[in-house]
Amino acid sequence: MRFDLQSGTTKCITEDLMERAMTVGKYSVANPSEAHPIPDTYKINVRVTSPHKAIYHHADRVASGTFAFTANEEGGYVACFWAPEHSPALMVAIDFDWKSGVAAKDWSNVAKKGQIEVMELELKKLFDTVTSIHDEMFYLREGRLKCKLSI
Image (cartoon, rainbow, N blue to C red):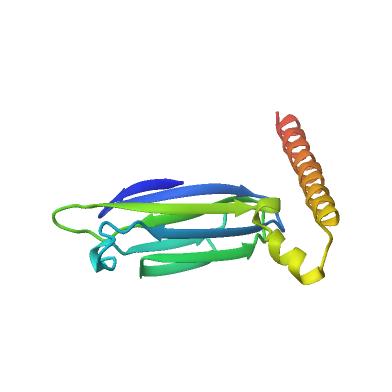
């Protein structure tokens, strides 16, 4: 996704993760002038935190970065981006990609490392997808049960 961030402001994106879910993220500031390096005024600060505010990633005054971790708890993980105050205010475009669960796995490296046949690789992907759906169904069912018990 791409979003705009005005200097002096913050934007946060939340991803609901299950416990033990793998997640990876990649972000970069779109260069306003391809002929020159990204100016310092366009560099951003980034922080990724858990539902209980544990910091999983932090970077100050960067043009790009990545993060990867396995969730220790279930709930809403938050990635916040902010640009330092600038006068006059400027708009910074940010490209952001956040994947979790099955989508976060690097299948091309799995295939290279294990010399896996194409069909076997596809079966592994399908198995992970089915397992993820199965876990999500139990997670949702458990949440619904908690709601009924609290009523």
